[in-house]
Amino acid sequence: MTIKNVTVAGSGVLGSQIAFQTAFKGFSVTVYDINEDAINKAKERIKGLRHMYKHDIAATDEEFEAGLSRITYTWDLEDAVKNADLVIEAIPERLDIKKPFYDKIGKLAPKEAIFTSNSSTLVPSALMEDTGRPAQFLNMHLANQVWLNNTAEIMGSPKTDPAIYKEIVQFARDIGMIPIELKKEQPGYILNSLLIPLLSAGEGLWVKGVADPEMIDKTWMAATGAPMGPFAILDVVGIRTAYNITEAQAKAGDSNAQVLADKLKELLDQGKLGMESGEGFYHYPNPAYKDENFLKI
Ligand code: NAD
Image (cartoon, helix red, strand yellow):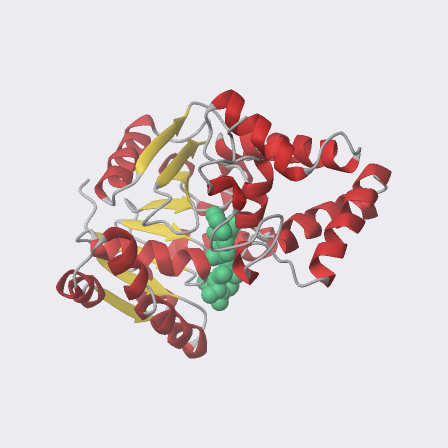
């Protein structure tokens, strides 16, 4: 099947970006969300991407407008999926929302339509039976700021049709993503399976007092050639997110996590949220780790 009409369901942070990127690359896109209010927010969010596309990837106003012109909006689910070749789902990360959603679109979408989930934490096996078409269901996980961080982690279930998997790999390329092909299900995909242990290890060294964040980052950068260390990455992720995860681990009884959560809370109380607030482990817009002397002896 040739994918032409793409429906993006859920138009929040990721859905709005995926919808625009897909339209920008020439596909006809229908954006679906639950009500008029959510759709109005989506329109604003999508229009708000103009600056980023111009600044980050030198898109022209004409190209941006052409992208916008290929998008239609609806809060009527039947209307949203009736002509879909592909439905990309980016609705909240909750099984009690995703399961009924797939049950509904499984009945409403054309029988040959493919469904992909952008879920960060659920493997496709968790949802495939709800779709009523497990062979045509898989995950395609795009990262925040899709126009810049252009990886698409593609993960099927044991029931995904290999031909459909290949089609989605090609689709990912067609929308400007680097397809990252996973051969089996893996919670956290490849990226977070690598990144989360690195960030946790960095935090652990800091909490134990082995070294301070700059020294830990310096070690990682000098020894591996990486452009950023774990604490610079944490500033991008945001200290609030790091705190929320750690606090949840502490509540589950992990006493080491409590020490880290307290340290992160101190930063939050001082308004140090990471890059978004201008300060976290580093000061922005010119963090020390970008200084040419950072790695000098
Ligand atoms: P979000 O909360 O910003 O947006 C969710 C959208 O879904 C909202 O517009 C909401 O109105 C809509 N929605 C709620 N119920 C719905 C329903 N039944 N049908 C259709 N739309 C519905 O969420 P997000 O951060 O964009 O995350 C969406 C998905 O993308 C999640 O699965 C998440 O794991 C994944 N993801 C998020 C990020 C990120 O950085 N935010 C990165 C990668 C993947």
